[in-house]
Picture 1 (tube, helix red, strand yellow):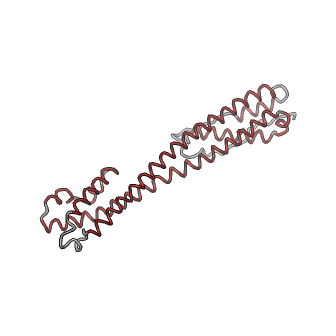
Picture 2 (spheres, rainbow, N blue to C red):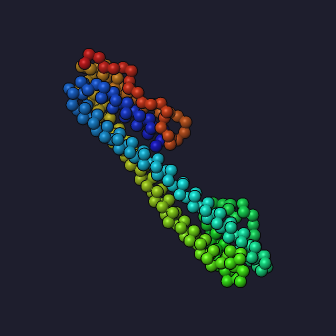
Picture 3 (cartoon, rainbow, N blue to C red):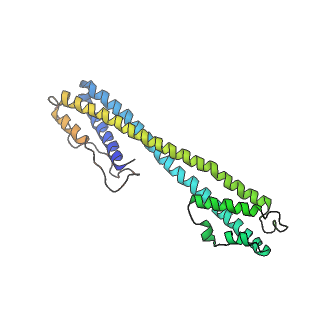
Length: 239
């Protein structure tokens, strides 16, 4: 969630706490009590969406990086073995393409690494019939194992894409939930003003304090503000 959304979510909680502390007023003004219950339900939905958003964000990075690192490590081992055999056979084509440092082999983004590994597997397949392929660990079994690792990354890429789509949906659902919560509050503002101003002015003053949105600055929000929500310092009088 954004800093603004965190601030609004805290405000919803503060308003809810304030209204709950003034139940005698709400017992008389049923329309405000109805709005309080609607806001509480919407706040619960927002909290649930926030938890889903946090869980989804943590999952994507973990799956992607772990698998790609495995591919880089296994690919480097196969590359080193293949180049050792290529030097014995004076295979200049393989050496021209894969005789490089470990750092150079692992360098680049996801797409470059995967393409490099696919080219490496193709070159290694061409040498798996060599009489010393087993000794140099570029045999069919070795290549099959590396190919299986490459193939295993594809569904995880799809899983990552699915999770990103899920994140996008959660973000849109959150936006809609905040819109609905603010609509509930807008109606409640009218109900408080029209029905409580004359008889319960102190209640209205406290409600207006609770309705203030305090945004904690400092960049995009992935964590909630540290200050816990508190009820307003102006309680209603004369109830």
